Image 1 (cartoon, rainbow, N blue to C red):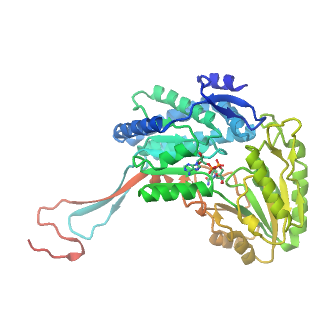
Image 2 (cartoon, helix red, strand yellow):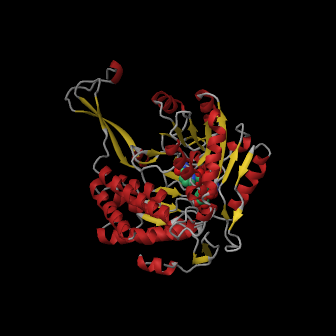
Image 3 (cartoon, rainbow, N blue to C red):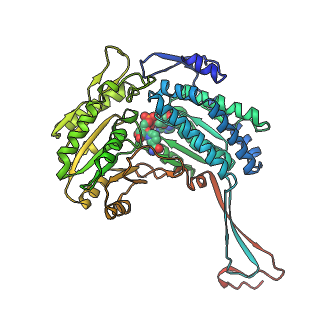
Length: 497
Ligand code: NAD
């Protein structure tokens, strides 16, 4: 199906604007969109503020009903939206489907949550006093998202924000505007079916960094949830802090899998390969580092090199069944991969892959053979996140050394250990400094039920499952006195008036 056909099937016309949207599959234009100006953004934020005043008064389970309907609209349109995701960001269609499924899953999760936004009752030290902790809607939320999860990250935020009582103004990546407009159109269908939701609950503001900056500086948005690179997060985090807003940051990763001597390699190797080359290495949770016991360094590297080699003819158009590795998002991304490879070659024992492929067929697109780099030490180049299918294989002598290597990078998103020794597994979970620590599964492919996010330069935010909803609400402590005498003061303080 072409883009017009896909948009038709979700009842959306091809947008007409002056900014081209293109596909990394062959570099061609797939349509044209219109960027927001500061004025149109201002109007969208104002509409979100108006919507907030109405939406916050709607009981949370009724807010959940809108999210339930949206989840069903997504179910009805899973395939066309998945195809659009694949066309616009280049991930293989199976992963496009997985991304839309993640949206549906988080809607279901949020519907359940809408009846469980529990506070606390607290024992008061004073007679005839009750104390409560209440969770109240926060206000309109600004969401900034990255190209590689063009729809799921927004859905994680939007589904939770909506049940919590908050409208959302969304600035998607400038590389994936069309999927954002498609999500907005599908959400509007849910609003029609629901009946009675205020205008402005969800809006999309298209544009590059400048529109993101304007969103970040807008004091009407008490929370900015931003997903992207560490430099972006550094800029967003400090701007939001300057105005005493709240920032939820989901930034770059540099994820490692430790392979111990007891590892079951039939379990470990498929996970390492999926983490390394899946999504063409363009996941925040992609496996960048494999830290292998020295006794197996040569063997595991050889097996990974063989695995990568066997994938050569599985690189190609991500819409085709059987293809496992699609294109990099753009030329800049390919050049960044080449620059990193040139740096690391100086220290590497061996480098497999990494070259451009299929350029005769796709002169305006960038497909790369996955690279496996055998190192004896973790060099400074390895400390940087390179957003491409590029994996370093590094030896260690004992588990503490493996953990030191593991924790030495500035990012702290996802980690894993391959072991059949329960002591090693538990020790690893205690000492990995990441937000995610897996045993016998890889670093990528998280489920929505857990809180997703990482430490250190990954930004500290948590999204999606568990109690991540608390980021979208404000906490209020409330003490009520129901007696008739002069109320007692806390800490036994006497104040005789
Ligand atoms: P990017 O940082 O280039 O852009 C992300 C978004 O931020 C875009 O919408 C962009 O327009 C906007 N932006 C950039 N600078 C901004 C600024 N100063 N103020 C406001 N907005 C700004 O990232 P990308 O290339 O789209 O995505 C890849 C990066 O995202 C990788 O580092 C990856 O690890 C990270 N990522 C993290 C997660 C996570 O959950 N931790 C998920 C996906 C991607």
